[in-house]
Length: 253
Image (cartoon, rainbow, N blue to C red; front, side, top):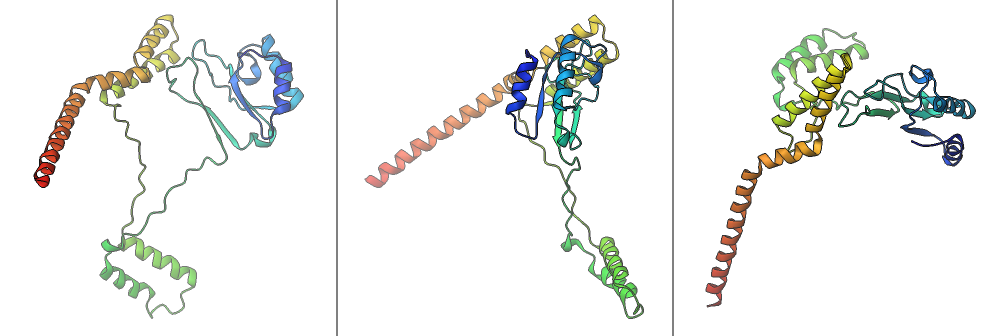
């Protein structure tokens, strides 16, 4: 990312609030987790100070080898505390770690389970309700009554479970899963021991497991079946067209 302080100042003057800027600044500074301060790093530091900007990076490396922090995420102070920043483990065919930035609450919403009334044990529920909520307990408070009725329902009425739907990627088969697993294993080896041999081996594996190549290879393996299906479909269509022609001629006569 080639830039100078004037370019950055001009960009900031045009951006409306809130401001979030990300990119490969190729700048080194101990301020965001680097091991040294270079000329470009000093320039970025001065820009941050001048415009009262915040760096979201948590000092995690954003480049694999040598491990460096050169991809920066910068924002205004008014949204700094509302942003969650992290790097992802899988490089996804790149030398740079993917960066995940989310705004607002990180709490995940879950569906409220519903009662399966058709599977309820009504006789048992009725018996427990009479025992715990009958005339023998006239002085029960409203809060206690609510707690007991919910507890009785939980004991006798099953609930549905929340399930996460996953997208079905047709071409992503077991071979693709093994290839991705192998790539991740090689990456962990590079992180623990970044030798030239390990890095070279990772680049080879990385080249073999690019998403596009995996998809093409998987589709090629399934091609005979696809061709057979296509042939059967074409034959069925041809037969149907022929039958329609015969039926039409019979009606005309």
